[in-house]
Image 1 (cartoon, helix red, strand yellow):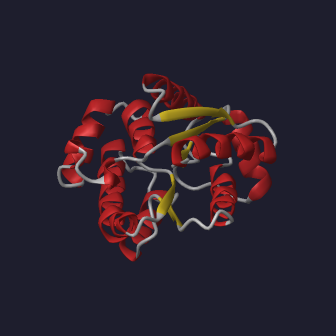
Image 2: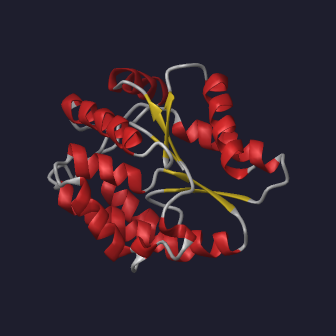
Length: 209
């Protein structure tokens, strides 16, 4: 799974990693969270719609988990049973950071609700309980939003939050990455696309060797 603050370049890196793994004759599926099922895509439109400025962090949390629960059951679990490598563009780490840290809900509450939303995955009896590895691309929010401005004309609802919020997001991702260096890898996302991809490939090769 590849995650990080807005504008970190994760979607570009996900596509490059997918191409790299497929050249090795691996079965690969890319999903985005929220999204990648009709229900989840519908929830995504609500979550990112700039018209809903009054949406609270708790409402965000439940909507993200509703979308993710559908994605896990409908797409991720069946794919893993077929020995497919699933690359997620965002997943649980985003919710821990955006709603848990920056939204002040608390990481523990987010984790507890995740267990409920996914039907007891806290026991880790299913490979879909959490990613094999989460790669976090670290980019200062100022740099991230410079990239966003250069790539499109408008920001979604999450991107329109205050700069202070996005600074907390970055701090949250760094804190999360440092909390468990086996589950998370922090990669400098300010370098060239090729340099970042090379580091990601090195990490992934070590996981799936």
